[in-house]
Image (cartoon, rainbow, N blue to C red; front, side, top):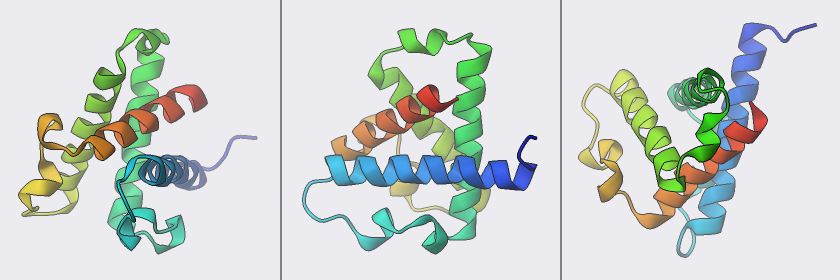
Length: 126
């Protein structure tokens, strides 16, 4: 029996969020802001929707490439997650702060590494 779409969407969002939290704890210098590591049930609804959407985008990308995403560099994987996330920010926040929509080269190293980890987590799960 397949999971209902809402249940599956929530599960995918949770996987994304757990990968984010793991990455932040691994790569963030010092103590991260509480919001960075807040559990799923404390995450704002828009952010849950965005996490689920980006999970689906990465999983679809892996699927339509026939698994050839394994040949991408780690940076290419992270850039894909970052770009998908930026689109979600624009979807959910009418006038986001520039730091929310910063391009890859402007992201701090911890965030780049976390985005890479997220892609690889989804790639291995999808």
